[in-house]
Image (cartoon, rainbow over all chains, first blue to last red; front, side, top):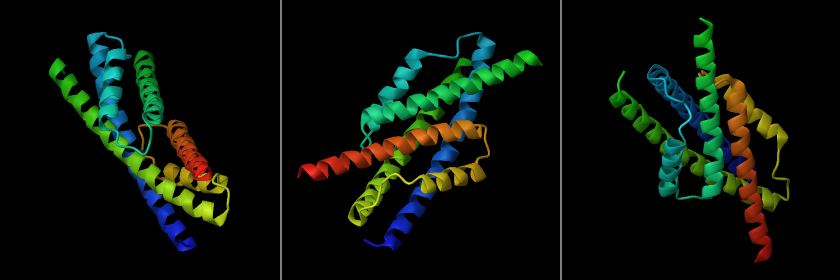
Length: 96
Length: 96
């Protein structure tokens, strides 16, 4: 293992970061669409059953090396920021 | 927009979640490799300059809808858990 290997691994991390960035933005776009439907239906955006379902599905498909508690933690942060985005949209909608 | 659309959008979110799960696990594997090299070199795992570089690259490539502060927040959580994973490996290495 050399400095060259380290640079090559870091390039891999950079590429993975950009792919993750793209996917969390795509996810946010879909969540915005869901928010619009819920808005029309007049139902609450936060749905603990739906969140439970998503975490269960992740648990069933997690082959590591990240532990489930770490995966839960990261995704709860992603869920939270998605909800905030919906709230922002809601506030903007109220202002127009 | 109907209940059917909502279900279809939720399926999209589930699929995106699984892709994100796969990528953060792939990323964790590469980070473990980096940790092993740094271990041999005897250098500190936490590298604030490298973290700054990664966040800058994400900023340059973020086309939204997630704001940069949200992207920073999610990735800092991902960085943190990756470091913990390295520390776990380090502790295991010390025990054998």
